[in-house]
Image 1 (cartoon, rainbow, N blue to C red):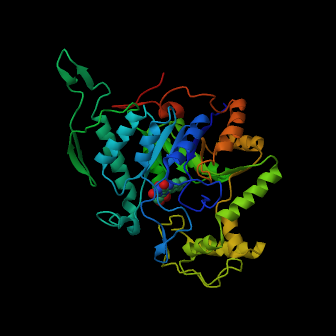
Image 2: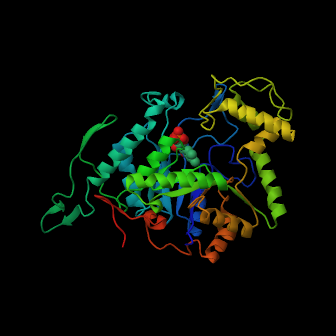
Image 3: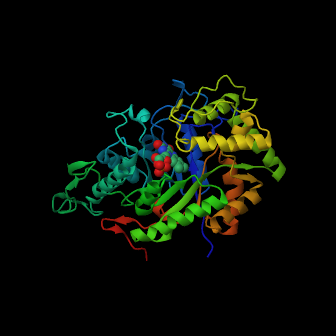
Length: 450
Ligand SMILES: Cc1cc2nc3c(=O)[nH]c(=O)nc-3n(C[C@H](O)[C@H](O)[C@H](O)COP(=O)(O)O)c2cc1C
């Protein structure tokens, strides 16, 4: 059976994928930038608009790493404003389960679900690094092994809060002189290892019952958490074969939780470059990579892996002759390289030798080349092939420009996917759960669709 593709838009990130120095780049913070990107995604009938979260500015060698975009407004506030200027687009916020409290997060997400008419989603991320923890009350308090025990209990507690209101709890019955239906709101009581709370939740049940839950961790525990509890996985496996392996691995875990494969959508983060010909697209892709990895960014990129100050090395010269310091990290808040740094250095040395690459050329080569490069037709075909080959259920597109970075995708590629019959011509329901083909969440769990 031909699968329908799910598409989502990521606001350009606070990393070197985002080319803020391009003359076409607009503000990273004005509401107009968020509005433009969200309205473009909605014009393209995307499932949702996604905001990532970084809770501490990245640092290198004790200073703010300001080669990339730094600083962002808070996600749920931005999404609440976007709810007023969009009508169907899902609105997904990344909110950390290590540093917040379930009552407050559940309240804010239920509010967004109401304001948007059932379009809220929560990307439940975890964090255990003390560097980020220093910003919070109990800095760095969570052991790595506990990040998912807390995340799981956090989500479970939020679900208990949402479920403490029946969907018909608000009666507003003037004859009976009652605002609430008797029994419509029940007290909550959660006693667990991480949270011990009780009381009455103060936001009525949202239109979706529970917001859509997204999960983005990649470890075994992360995958198990997604299989047990998430509706969507935001994955970094965007290459065909590794995407298929990840897809198989996660989907097979669902049965243990009494869930069907279609109840969890797998959406890798991807990038794209279009051209009128394949050659033109390839040329543009190289230009963009060079803008993303300037000389200083190349040095920083290697320092994050080497754990050493490499500022004395020429970005256009060979790889550092020193060995990595595996105990130290000079870059902070950079999550990508916390494992296997020694192995990575050996691999990169071999690659640089084989292809005779300088530091900057190596950084360009290994730091996430664009996923889809080609004409609108070839990119549409490739997107469809990925999904039909079970390497994904769709994609979260990460543009390199704010705010116009998805314009040509929506104008040129989406119509071709619609023509193929693999992507919706229009929204068929008002809620994000409708777009994802997921049932609303009742107080007893998932409601059966007819
Ligand atoms: C594609 C992707 C996107 C992520 N986005 C964020 C983010 O915006 N904010 C954040 O704090 N963590 C983010 N993370 C980190 C994860 O949610 C998770 O906390 C981290 O990967 C550690 O879990 P793990 O050991 O299971 O991978 C992201 C991870 C992936 C794979």
